[in-house]
Amino acid sequence: MFASHYLPTPPAAAGPPKGAILLLALLVALGSLRPAAAANEADVPRRPAALLRAVMCEDIQNFAPVNPAVVFPITIGKIFCFNIFDPVVQKTFIYHDWYCRDKLSKRVKLDLQTPRWSTYSSIQLREEDKGPWHVIITDPDGNIFHILRFSITD
Amino acid sequence: MKNLLFLLSGIRWQDIVDIILNSYILFRCYVILRGTNAFRVLIGIVLLWFCQRIALYAGLIVTSWAIQAITAVAAIIIIVVFRNEISNVLQAKTLKTLLWDVTHKTVDTPVEVLLETVYELSRTHTGALIVLPARDSLEEVVHAGIPWNGQMSKEMLLSIFWPDNPVHDGAVILQGSRVREVGAILPLSRNKDLPSCYGTRHRAGLGLTEHTDAMVIIVSEERGNVTVARKGHFVEIQRMEELADALHSHLGGAEGMARHPRRAKRELGIAALVSFLLVVGIWFTFSRGQESLVTLEVPVQYLNRSPGMEILSTSADKVRLNLTGADALIRNIRPEQVAVRINLANGQIGSNSFAITQDDIRLSPGIVIERVEPATITVVLDAMVQKEIPVQVDWVGTLPANLIMLSATVTPATVTVYGGSLMVKTIATVYTEPLTLDDIRESGSLTANLALTPPSLRLAADSRGHVKITYVVKRKTPQAAP
Image (tube, rainbow over all chains, first blue to last red; front, side):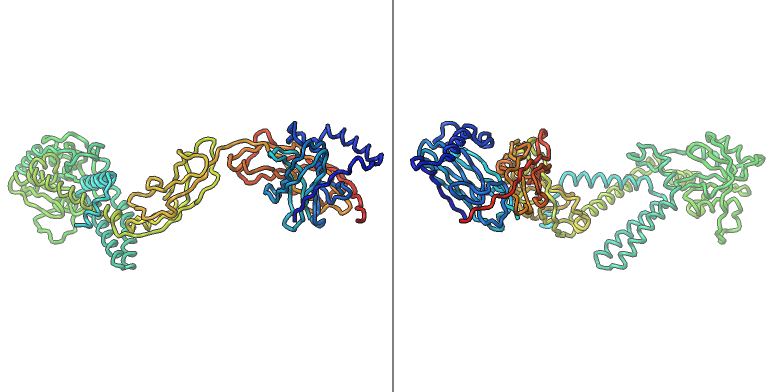
């Protein structure tokens, strides 16, 4: 039902396309802004990693989330919690705590590598999983990076 | 002996007060009503009640039912039939007399004056009819009396019966030391066996005593004889001492008691003893009679909770009480009369165990608790705290397949809730009531009420019970083929 993966971002030495450089510049710029909710709920300075992006999505293709959303039909069978951390100062790990109606369903430990890292966890959906969910992304000390709220519906 | 000790062991001071108080009330009823017809009928009703109890105990259902019905009707009849008599008795008494005095009458008739008058009337062959009422009312049997209300004296009585006086043929009705009425017409006796020597005056005197407890002194005009009529019988008076005895006997009062102090005291003593024994018997019948057992399921009431605390949960809302007591008490007990009250004054935050004791259970006197199930109740108490909690939308239904909801922003994003700390601690999210996706075709906003669970959770004063949800939808991006 549950799965976790890490997606090392494509190395810069490989000669990234021009569009990719622009995207990276945009990400760096956005990195200073951070997701508003993440900044509000838990943002502790001087962490070994900084969360750049966190979304719930239907799939992950080419190291990118597909159809990020807050409502998912149970018919899609699987959902993902996708994160980008930038920068990652030192090797560390994070947790994805999946809650269904405030009840912990799964805790997933995900490693982070320097200097930036994308990672995700997923769950296989069952009929009884319908309802409001949230995923809490925390560092090893339990500090919250971000909380993602979404619903599994018919 | 062992049984007696068991019976006496459970007697409380309230029971002693109960018995003494009711014994005295019964004794006072005897003192006030003794000698009246109402009292005699009352004795009959009490005997009927005893018969009914015996019949019930023996299992004679129809007999018991019939006697019970007769007793109930008789109790009503006694009030209706003897209302005048009861009224006279009560009106004639002062508060002190009702509560304390034991003399037979409160107003004394001057016997000496009466004796001298009767002697003079007899000597002069002056016909006379003198009525001395007792407890019974004369209003319904005596007619045409002329109100007089004069102080009684020998001269006055002689002048009333003087042959030329227009009212001399009627009867004089005395009340204490006063002449209440003159010229009164008394009912004639229907006794056909009276000797021919008795004329109309004697028949009238006897007639009154057949209907009431009054005493009538009759002086014959022809022979000068003095006759006393009482309780439907004549007594010929040969000497004035006999008349004096008859008067003292009838009038009673302080003088009567003074003449027969030992007899009067013995009579009162017996009455007091009988009253006491009767009440003790009744008390034992009700409170220590045949033991019965009953099981009641009683709700538990929790009292004296500290301010700022609330009951989070209890191990039981009802307890089963096995009660024993006299059959009469057990049969009359109702669940609402019994209450189990747990005092939470010393309760602490968290789980508290309270053993249910006798002090926690309110029962009618005479009922004993045999068993309590459960014997201990666990009450979880909690302090009231506030907590700011994020709000999340509870989406239901189906979003059209070609749409995807990118975001749903809740305003306000958090609400402050108020509830028990243990309960609030476990709550991380407040959800909205379910919102359907079926009708969503484009971005927009909705207002939704909050669904607070558990119900004991409350919103703080500064939080509203509804939130605004602004959602963004867009057409789904087709996924690339793998």
